[in-house]
Length: 425
Image (cartoon, rainbow, N blue to C red; front, side):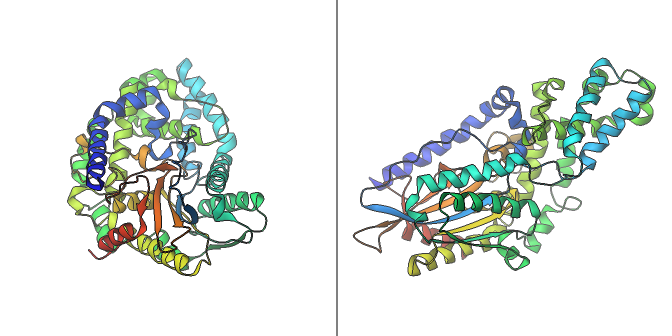
C-alpha cells in the first residue's frame, strides 16, 4: 500500500508537469500579476490543513521565509522611466496615452521615492498573516512561555519581515520568548552561494549566457508599445532605447501589486508581451537559483548549509524540547535553492532549453513575495520516539520524494534519512 500511494503521488506530479505548457500563458492571461514572477504578491487563498493523525500533536516548526512584498530595488528603477517621460512631456513628444502614463508614474513615485528595496506595508501584512495562521493551525507549538529562535539575513527588508512575523506571534501570546537576531554570523546558511555555483551563474561568463542573450533578444519586441506612448519619431530616435523602456515599464507594472498606490499599467500590454517578458525573468531566476541541467545540481546545492541547519535544529528540538520553532528569514533565491534541493513537487526539475522551461517550471509558483517552506513536526503522545513531519510550501501541503502511506505526513526518520542522503552527495 505504501508503494502504491507513493507511485500515485509521482503520477500526480507528472500530470502537473504536463499541465505547465497549457497553464502558464493561460494563467498569466487570466491573472496578469503572475507575469511578475518573483514579484507576485503572496497568495491570499490558503488551503485548509489536513487533519492530523489520531494520537499525534504538533510540537515543533522549522521555517524559512522570503521577505514580504517590497518596492523595486532602487529609486533608479522608477526614475529611469519617470525622467524619460518627463523629458518627452516637456518636448510634447507623448501620445495621449503617454501623457496618462507620465501622470501615473508621478503618482507611483510619490510613494516609492526613497523606498528602493524596502519592505512595503503589504509585506508587513503578509508576514503578520502567515504568523497568525501558523499560530492558529498549530496552537500546541506556541503554548505558554515557549521559546522561539528568529534569525534573518542582514538585509533590512528581511529583518523587518522577521519583526512583523514575530510581533504578531507575541500579540497572540505575550508569554512567548523570541530571540531576534540579524547577523553576518548566520549568513553561512541563511544566504549562501558556493564558488562553484557563482562561477556557473556569472551573468557575464556563465556557460549559458550566450544562449540566454539570444533567447532574450527573441522575446523583446518593443515597437508596438513605443508607438502607443511616443508621438515624436525624432525624440524616439535620439532619446528612447525601446528595449530598455519596455523592460523598465514592465518592472514598474509588475511591482505595483506590492505597494499601496492603486495605479495599474497592465492596460499597456498585450498578453503575449507579458508572457514573453515573464519568460526572460523566469529563465534568469532558474539559471541563477534553481537546477539548470548544465549545472549538474551545483546551484541547488547552495541550500545544503541551510538544509544541514534544518536537520540539526530539528534534532536538537526533538532531543531537548527547548525550542518550539526555528524561524529564518531571507530571499527568493534561498527559497528556490531549498525547494530544488529538497525536490519539493517539481521545483527541482533539470532542463537547459529556455524555450521549454515554461512548460515545467514557473518562478511565480516557487517564490512569490513572502514565500516560505515550513516543516511541522508531530509527536505520538503514547510513543515519544514516533515523530511525523509534513512539508508546507506557501502554507500548502506538498510532496517530497519520500515514501509515505499517510500523505501529507511522513515519518521523520524517513525524511531525515532522505535529507542526509542529499547532504552526503
